[in-house]
Amino acid sequence: MVNFLAIVLVIASIVIITAVTLQDPKTEGLGALSGTQTNVFGRSAHRSKNEMLDKVAIAGGILLFLGSIIMVAIN
Image (cartoon, rainbow, N blue to C red; front, side, top):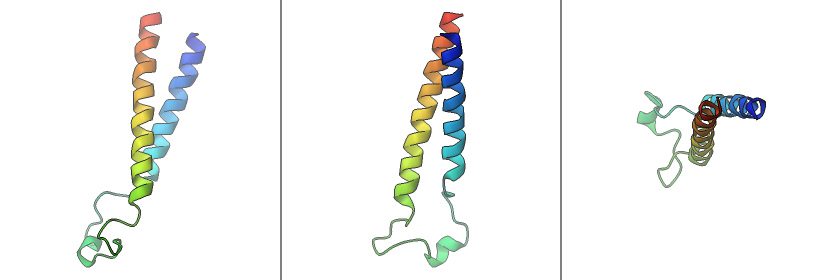
């Protein structure tokens, strides 16, 4: 059981790291002044990808938190 939880924690950590590194920056710096990354409705062109990666990172964080708590309770 402990080995299974350790594997789950490693996988959750890798998922969080991957999801966070694949996200686009929230601020575009001076590129935001010209509006180059917006579409007709004013929303960011990469918004849906970032929203999905946000949800994946949150789910990975919850899994990591719960797995850590269970691991401490077992030991």
